[in-house]
Amino acid sequence: METVLSTNLDNSGRIDANKTNFAKDVPKIARYTLADSADNNIGMDYHVQIVTKDDKLRILKFLRRFFFRDEPLNHCIQLIPESEDSTCLELEEYCSMSTLENNLSLMAVSTSGAIVGVLLNGKMDPPCEGDPEYITSCENPKFKKILRLLRYVDQNVNRSGQYEGLNILEIRILSVDSSWRGKGIAKTLVEKTIEIGKEKGFHMVRADCSSFFSGKLCARLGFERIYELKYADYVDEDGNPVFNPAFPHTSIISYIKKL
Image 1 (cartoon, rainbow, N blue to C red):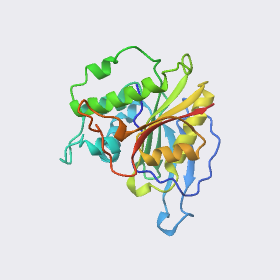
Image 2: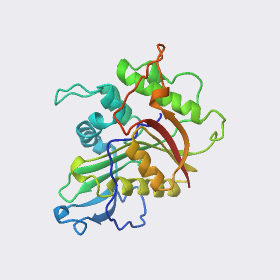
Image 3: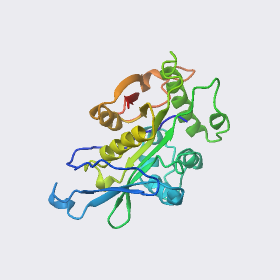
Image 4: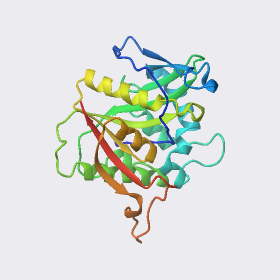
C-alpha cells in the first residue's frame, strides 16, 4: 500500500526528545511539556504511545475531523461531502488495512486523554505487476483517482529496482489537531517512527508527501528526496491535470531515510 501523508503541518516549537524502548507491552513512550514555549500553551502536555487495535474507532474519529478534509488531494477533489458526519468508507479502509494492528503506528495523547496527533505506519509491500486488488475493487471514483496517483508514484520510484528486497517502513498518514499545530508534534512522531524502524530492523523509512508541509518536515529531518511529480504534469486523457491542490501544494514528493 502506498502513502498518503499530509495536512497543514507547521513543526516549530521546542521539544525535549528522549530515546525510548518500543517494547510491545510498554505502549506509553514519552511525555513532552509545551507549557514553557508560550503563555497560551500552558497545560498542553502530551505523551506518545503505540496504536493498538483497540484505538481504531478513536483514530478514525480523529482522522475524520482533521485529516480527511484537510489533506490537499482530498480537499481539491472534494472527496468528503460537506455534511458534518460524512466520511469516505474506502479511505477509512485504507487507514485500517494492516496499519492499526501492527505495533508500528503512533499517536500523541494529551493529559486529558484526547488524541492530538496521529502517524500511521506500515511495512511496505514489494513492487508488483498491474494494479493491486485494493485499487481495482475500489468503488469510489474520487478515491480511486488518489490510489492510482500513489500507484503511479510508487512505480516510478521503483522503476530501476534499487529498492527491491529491502525492508521498508512506510509513513502513510500524518495528521495533527489544528489547535496543537506548531508545537513539534509531527516532528516528534516522525522521530519516534525512525526509532521504531531502527529497533525493528527496517532498512529505511519512506514517505510520499502530498503536502508541501509534510515534505518540508521530512527534509528538515534529513530525509533524501528521491522522486518528485508536479501535479500539473499528472494529466488525464484530455491533457488536464487530475489534481489542482491549493498553493503551496504543487507536487507529490517521495523521501527516504536510511536507517
